[in-house]
Amino acid sequence: MINLTLPEVEALAREAHAAQTDKAGRPYAEHLQAVAEGVRARGGDEEQIAAAWLHDAVEDEALSEEWLRAAALTDRTKSVVRALTKRAGEAPQAYAARILATPGALLVKEADLAHNADPARLSALDEATRARLEKKYAHMRSLLGLTAEEAKGEGS
Image 1 (cartoon, rainbow, N blue to C red):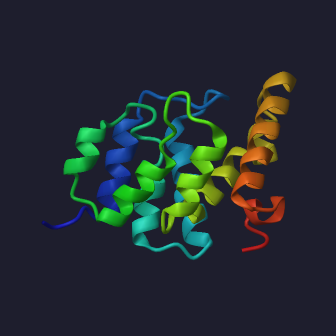
Image 2: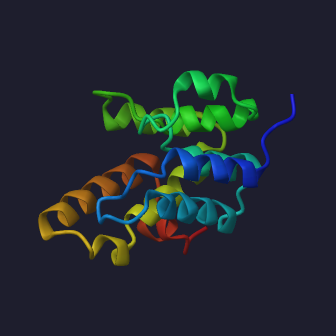
């Protein structure tokens, strides 16, 4: 089987999330692109960049687990996507443990958290939402052993 190229993965992710916006009302593909660029900037490889484009696809039901299982992607890319897919009712500790146990997943999550916690992005939200998300992201960074500087890419 020939694997999808990065431009093909990007196009597929953009199409799958086309109707979706983030909490600030921006096109969701902007977040995916920022995470993919963050992975690249942190020295991630093509498999991790592909996973960055797809990291929310199954969780957001933009693509199904069945699609992922059959997709022309490496097993490592699929494993990273699965590791980053939160499960209903899952404790943050279990989610973090799965990320830490999956080769390549921590770098993608680090880039995801960095973009999610970007002050410019958070400034578009109301104070209560911003405070809740800042606390949530800081807790996840702690569970993953990331400092705030690493999450921003300054310590990588």
